[in-house]
Image (cartoon, rainbow, N blue to C red):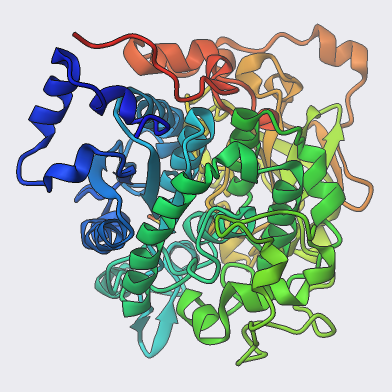
Length: 571
Ligand code: FES
């Protein structure tokens, strides 16, 4: 004792150490405070985060591993975010969840932490927290749900909601049939089974080196998840002994490996803001252009929805994430370490592809170049994101007149108006959806197509937005436009009828309006300040301090680290 952080609370024979020990006894062995690593289990289990509701059971298995390795497990319920439930968008609360978790880890007598997450924002928030407090940390991803079926076909959560609802709007399916699919959509515990944000962030966390290699992507109902949780508990104790903290593990090389992985799996565009935010907490130099430079040429090897056909349990059956990484091993930095203390590439030798339709070999990719492309131009001077793998190839070079919506409410009110001046070659523009503008940067960039065009058989259009897109969505969508309209970006002054030119190959997005005219245009009040409810509390703090999407949409005062030191005693 004496070396460990928790000894600052528990060692000694004075009044304060007495208080700290006495209140924690409650049945634990009496030697629990004598140098045994105190391991928090930062647990996002919540009935209101249905994708994470099973994490209490996972926590029990983590606990067994911690006890077994000589540590003391401590359940620490932390802020949880159910993607489908919280309003106005879970992204508004990601930084709050990260801040609250960071502060609770720092405030408590903890030597290390196991991070239990699943649903979209939970793993990013936990990793941001762990990065800032810099205590030894390891993630257990909660795993994807089992695949449900409807009319004999597998259902991809999220992706098939978008697809079926468009079929209803296009007159190809009755609303009654649509509602019938509802009970089949979520078949079991676990997070969305597509390559949406939850699956992406679990796999990306493993590529970063923060998960026991081979565990991410294990289905939530699979007993091997509990086995991995048990082993992770043991590993957490080892991490404390080795002093293996996020700052010692996560380097620029780790993030570049994560970008390669993101491209190879066809992962969610949301990983861009999350990885940038985590890197910002660590002081690792990472920019949006790294996603293009490192990832754009990487082949898509995983045939999963929304870019492909299969679902997460298929990926696991086919060999899992490590089999994917093995195919791109030459693109991975061999120096990047994992929580095991060994490089990521050292864990790839045993991996095998068992179903080459689900995981493609390198010589037979689903798409030869699949990563995220970063566009710039007079419409997005700070950059914008597109995922070419989820877009229509014929729209990747396109010119068309803008149809502009000032807010999601404006878009919903007019998108199906028969008099809307929209044609198949129009470019739908939605603004007021950035970090400050909404606030919270919601997943609305994949606007529904106008009903009259759907009825004509149109299935994709170029869409431009300062918000985000669900990882389960698809289409030719340019998102994260920076600066956003509410921060004075040019998007604020685009008008219906302006010609917008997209050229993904040359990485440009422009509005064909002269610089002088653009500068002279004054945005309307609704664009800059469309959300007029009184603001206080977190929302006030968020709007005043949130950064733009190109650096991860963190709060300015949360970038960086405070470390784990708390010098003042509580009594
Ligand atoms: Fe939780 Fe999709 S809603 S992962």
